Image (tube, rainbow, N blue to C red; front, side, top):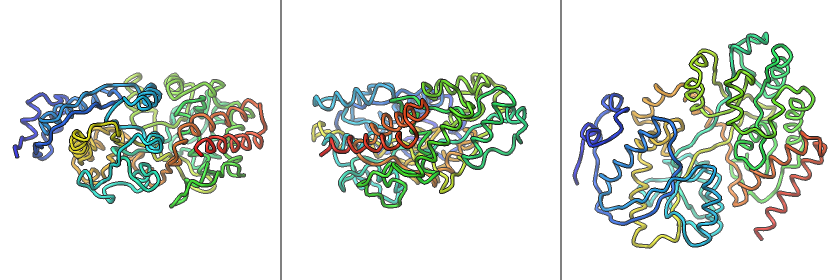
Length: 441
């Protein structure tokens, strides 16, 4: 077994931008594996400088750790990957391995496209992962993937606009009802929109921002808020769901305190409005701070991150993240190579470095020096981390993406455009979900 020091690894082409920080962390031992094989991996491109540096460093590390394994990397955007993956695997092609958002994997497991992949296959146990995260990979009792990272978003607001509106800049809204009150006051006193509502159809940003409110009010699509959900009963048609939808109606229709473009906005448009000081509150990732301050350094003194407000029933956020999966069209001779790769990808160090603005999927990563390094470098990271205990996963069913990205936004549109009453919009959503689920049978 050959070993190499962290310093020597950096000299061999690792990310120079991280060298100073890495030098403060105890050297690690790189153990080479004698496993051989080849596989195609689909991967979302890194975007921020530090993510690019870490991914480049990881690729170099894997070459050293797995010298007998050839990895063919193919990069696809988040927006393109799901549709292309659906087409590719149904034609018998596509990647042999991919890291997919937490919502996607079960669709491919239910379709018979994924191989079993359990913690034990990569030298770990179930105790290495959040139960909610590991369960997102389970379909009909079999585990088809493992968590690479987990995260929730945070509630972000502009303290300067709060002060201009006559609000205490150090006191964010404690409840979702207060969010509506603050939004109304901000709009009335400054002309700036309060909450940056996101409600675009067929876009993943929308359920990540609506569902936390719905759950906080006690609503749910099925029984996903329970400790041991069965996903056998549609529960969206409830007074609690209607209350959450009413809150959005009040802000959009009655008060007009959110952007009129909210029904077409994704977080990309929302961010631009926030940067232009035309929106004062929004939901997004901790990484948003770096994006905002890179675009406008003065944002550094105006922006605050806090936990999500509470609802009448709970505080909630979408329990998000990604999972690593192996597709079943891979040659048996190459399966061991994917398992060795997953061992490296899921170790505590790389669980941190490849999730710089998120959180490690392997819980041992929280004890790794890299976690402390990340906390010191990523402002407000601890806010998103603290929300993990309030995280609720989307229903682990193959229809989850369709329900969340199409049915939920359509329900919102029907109510906010007054195409339907709130009651009818919820009833319509229930019927659509039942139709979607019936197609499986």
